Image (cartoon, rainbow, N blue to C red):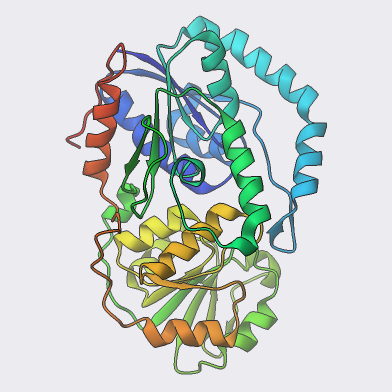
Length: 364
C-alpha cells in the first residue's frame, strides 16, 4: 500500500471527473489517497471522498464577454498571493508532512506538485494541458499571443515529474522522453449510455448570456430542432421558441440528450469532446477566446473530420455543420478514441517504473 496525494486543478469539470475515476481505482487497490482541490474540484471530490479531500489555494480565471481576461486573471491571482501562501503553508504542515506521501499525482495542480519537487517526493503529471508544451502541434500564426501565454503558464505549473501522462484525442510527436500519450478516459456514467441518432442538435453554452441572438440564428434552420442548456440564469425558466427548446440544468437530462443527439454544439473543452467521441457524435466547436488549449482542440477536431470549428456561432457555421453532420465518422489512425482499459494499462506501465512501484487495478 502506498500513501498518495492527488492534486486536482479547480477550474473546469474534466480535471475533477478524471481524478475521481483514477483516484477510486487507487483506493480500490488498497492505497491511502489524500485529495487536494480548490473551487470546483474541491466541491466535486468532497461529494465522493469526504474527509480525504483537503482544500488548497487554486488559481482562478477572470472572464469578460465570454473570453478569458488575461490582465484581470493575473491581477486577481497576484492580489490573493499572500492569502494563498498562508493557506497552503498551513495545509503542508498540518496534512502533507504528517501524511509522509510516497507519491504525488497532479492533474494540473501546481502547488502540491511544487511541494513534492521541493521535498524530493516523486510525482507524475496526468492531464491534457501538457499537450501544448510537450507535443509537436500545428499552430496558426494569428494565435501567437494566446499560444505564448498558454505555453508560459503550462511550463510554469511544475517541473521535474517522473512522467508526464498526456491524455489526448489525436496522435502527435512527443518532445521529451518522460512524456507519453494516452487515449481519453470517460466517466462510467457515460460508458453506460446507449448512443442513438436523434433528430435534435444538443447545444451547451458555458456563458449563456444572449438567448435572443441565439434564437435568431437557430430559427433560420426551422427543420432542425435544438435542445439547449446553459441559459437558466438568463431566462429564469425553460422557454421554448420555435425550433429551440431551452432546458434547465440537469446532469441526467443532459447526458440523456447527449446520448440521443444528432450532433453537439459547444465550446472546445476536452472533457465534453472526449464524451462526444465515445458516443460518436459530430461537433460544432466554439473555443473560448483566449483559451489556447480549446483553440488547438477545435482545430484538430476539424482537421480529423470529427466536426467543425468556428469563432462565432452564426448562420454560416451552423449551415456548414449541418451539411456534413450525417457523414460517417472518420476512420483515421491519427485519432485516439476514448479507451479506459488502454489508459489504465498505460498508467500501470508508468507506475511500474517508479523506484517504488505502485499497483493499480486495471481490470475494472
